Image (cartoon, rainbow, N blue to C red; front, top):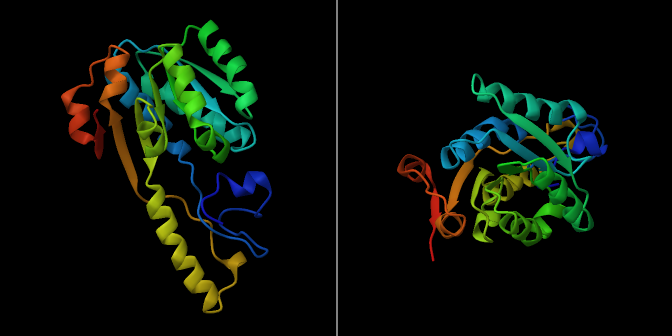
Length: 216
């Protein structure tokens, strides 16, 4: 499998370190980057004190999503920040999710990736734009589709590394003995056109860190 969100939570493998059975592969999500994503968003929105995290229930364990919240809150100290976790299973839930985000007066949004969100990324990006909500995403494709900024795994690298698994299995390795790995390379992408539309100025210090800058 490649890529996958959290196959242990989904019940596809017994655990990431000991998959068992006949399935292994690479995960796609990087929840450990929640705090750095918040920091990047705060560089663009310095007064950020209320942030929403949009995620698809079932893609992460309760302990992991709670850690995402704690990591953001801890990284914001001593300034303090209010983090709101908002779940949405699919496109039919986006309107309600963004109504909840708007009602909470969130000033920024962190979107955790999963296959459904990737498929309907324009739906999410358009709602963020309609609500004048600066948002950071995980994958480059979100920034390329109009999202403000993305920071996460280099998806192409994940697929390239999958060839290594194929090679090992064809040479006799058992999938259940090969631990499920996470992404190893990250990329930061900034969409200056979207920043302009939102009336935001992206600091030069952040642009200097970017792997790609989108301008029209």
